[in-house]
Image 1: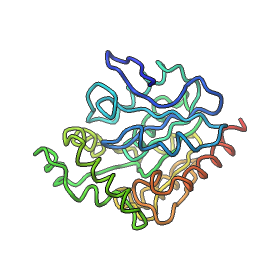
Image 2: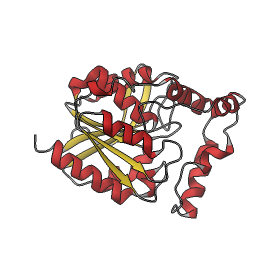
Image 3: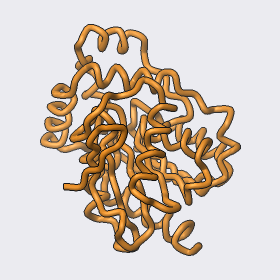
Image 4: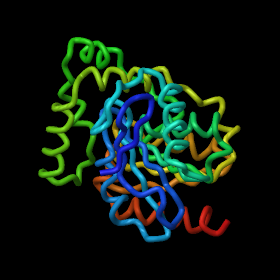
Length: 255
């Protein structure tokens, strides 16, 4: 299993940084882990080299979660440097998308492109939701809002089990980071090719969030995945992988 030591902590990632192909580093959302990208790790074409990391305090990685996107952003840059990655595409889901946008604004010279999945330039969280997390409980409606109407019962049950087996403290840190995040007025500064993906039934980061990204990122391109919810890359992996492959082929690989 690939680990590296960063800031004194063992960090887990899936993939091989030394493989051929365009490197795409996948960053998960709140309370998640590298496993949210398994379909991308296994099923993207060989021209793409996918790598997925567990953020600190998530999945198999040691350390503690952060309550600021900027802290995750800087940590991700140190991880990228430790991994020895050259120019790469940064893909992020939800909180991971916020980290990707902030990375582009601060370390843009290291990127060749962005993939923004179920995310937005501002990610406010209901105060009542955060208050419940402070009591050590994960609101039951959280798992109910993750998936679209076409999700299988098995996938929904596994997702619900994962949510309620994850520490409320991890969700509190991550969703506090989301709540403080706002890059709405800075998107025009990001001049990288950007693929924006959203499920048509996403209730946590609605389609209007992705439309805003499309309208304000100079090189943004939007792909709507019909019937999917917030976990679009798990619910509709083939459609997401096709969109990613097209984007990389048309915007990155030809460079």
